[in-house]
Length: 95
Image (cartoon, rainbow, N blue to C red; front, top):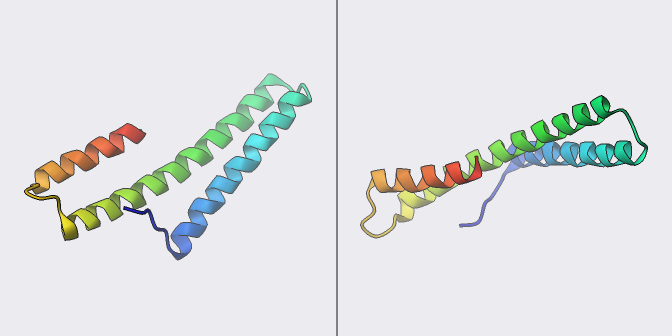
């Protein structure tokens, strides 16, 4: 299944990823300039949070689409419980 984002959802994820990209570039520059360790770690933590938030949005959308797709198409003989367990395993692999 292809992951698809629409409208505000797409804009939000892309903004978070661009923010993280900018923060990571900032961390690289700070290290090259020999900046204070505390400043570097603070910026790195901000980049990590931005990536986490983008990741959670992607995971939520992906799982919702997987669930909708599975309900429509279903795997042969798969029960709702089996489908739920499969999706839970997918989610935990990304956590």
